[in-house]
Length: 451
Ligand SMILES: [Zn+2]
Ligand SMILES: [Zn+2]
Image 1: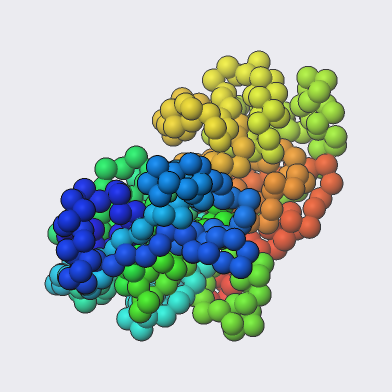
Image 2: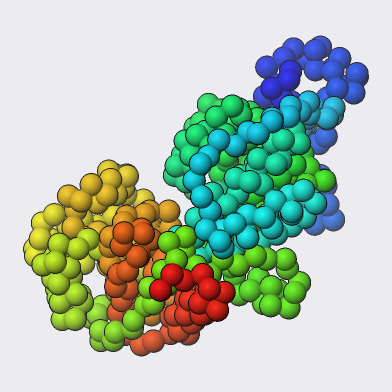
């Protein structure tokens, strides 16, 4: 039953006989608790924390013979109903210490180094810390020293990120940096999900499987959808980490509430205002483009937007063009394909998304029209970025900072054009620009820029 360590599962999902489970419960090796708890309002799901009445339903249950209530919110991971028993291992997890587990010969920038030391201290002291690092600061590497010291203590480290792509992308980098340390990856469809290891990379959603498993919990892109709007994931984190544990948040764009907390000293944070290559962040410029939606309906793009695109095609410089919604994406892509048929449009739900992104990386696609979904994670060395309709409410400060953050990430091409085409400047646009300028000032003040 050792594989059950660090997980909490409905009893019926355990591949053991009822007698064996009962014996383990009796020996206090396993612990059992109800899946749903009755509250004054209705129910609360113990696995996902849901207590919203509208997210429960009932069904005629064969097991308990009643109209049994179940949680709809975490249904995708198996049904938790009022007669479900959740089981976890009561005994502490056995731990193994790893001497000098880090095998990485890269170097950290001065700013990374400083943050790395603070993260290490937070981990050793079981504290909470926010790492506010600009896009391209190299936040993964700065975790290595802290993770190494945790593994030396025999602690378990869980790193959760909202998206499966990122889990997949990080896994080989961690395997390389910690070659002798077992690592499992948890995402929907992964064979290893739920399997505890000294190092676990998980989607925030799959964390719901874990219970009191991690001594060090790292949450990547803490501001990103869906973590920021989904209390379930915050609950998942609270259940997955041990009561005595450290909690490290990573973000390039903390919410306004968190920014305020930091300024007031209510939240511990370390800020990395400069990219690892020491060049300032490209600052967005604003350009009015009139009523572009109306123009689009007439089958045309605003002149200045079209000119921007043509210039990039002429120069052979790759670019992203962000638009607010899928229907606009289709219209814009259709128009631009008449100019150059290699241009493609990719939106969040496109099944062939990965293929197009790869084609863009390979350079066979000169310009990619997209919605916000590609704003994070995708790194292509030498590109320009424009937003059409930057005034749309979907483009928040954080989304716009992330979009601008796609540009100039490589040391060989630290520059690039970031253009927000708009039909009326918004507060969010102004905030995004100010955010970037402030980071550049801070970087300069701290002597982190090479120029
Ligand atoms: Zn039942
Ligand atoms: Zn639930």
